[in-house]
Amino acid sequence: MNDPRRKFDHGWAVLPVTLFLLTAVATTFLGAGPWYAMAILTILGAHEFGHYFACRWHNVDCTLPYFIPAPILLTGTLGAVIKIREQFPSRAALFDIGVAGPIAGFITLLPFLILGIWLSDLMPVPDDPGTLLLGEPLLFKTLARLVHGPLPEGTDIVIHPMGFAAWVGMLATALNLLPFGQLDGGHIAYAVFGPRAVRLSVITLAIVVGLSFLATSWIAMAVMLTAMTWVVGLRHPPPLDDWTPLSRGRLVIAGLAPLIFVVCFTPTPITFAWE
Image 1: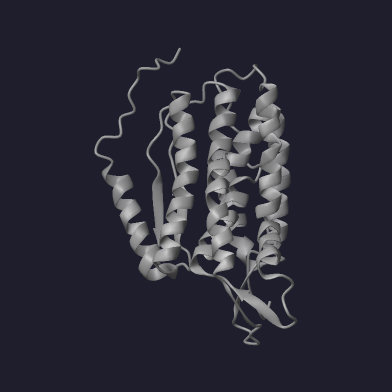
Image 2 (image 1 turned 120 degrees about the vertical axis):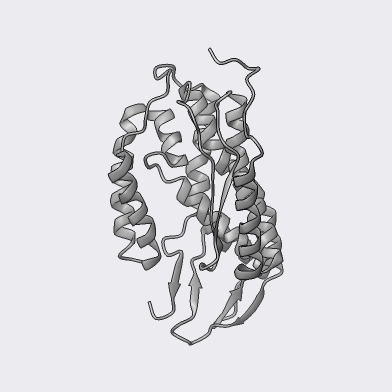
């Protein structure tokens, strides 16, 4: 039995703090500016600390969040992760830890998305074939219509940096909720379906590979999922208690995960006008 008095040893947390500062610099000066950096760090931090505090609740040993700077990318970051350093004690713990991140991140990105859309400008659609186009998730489309109304023909929204951070947050949330392997969605799927969740992993991999032929921006995700399959396989490691089913309340919350995925997902995240 876990000892609730056990301390989480983070030492001086030098690496997490260093990576956070590097990511703050990358997202501020090489990303889209301070408004973007503030928003994206808050959204990603909320997501990972959702996992972290769920781990603390269930007394599962984990690290502090590791932010990943990526100064060569438009986003300035590849997101953030935590490392869980022991086996999940139960399906309930697995579910809570898996779902806490996406829910916390989604709730946090909403005000940034609303304000970012409100601060965005309208301009004529550029005819440059090299123009970068961002896919519009259902949530973005809905809020944009509420704020700006139907767009005049030939115009488009130039997203404010804060709205761009929320868009990146929606993309990260949707990708993490894919019911694959040991992604957040994979944790949730195993907690609900047990070993049968491997079928969802197979289907998800096939769909993502198929999407990479629709939009080149899916190629990186297809490569990552393929690499994960090669290294750790499609089967999720079972928790210590793999027989106690989830409570009715957790099953209700499990139904929210697909809804969040649907409103955050776009089949063409990033394309060029020529595509």
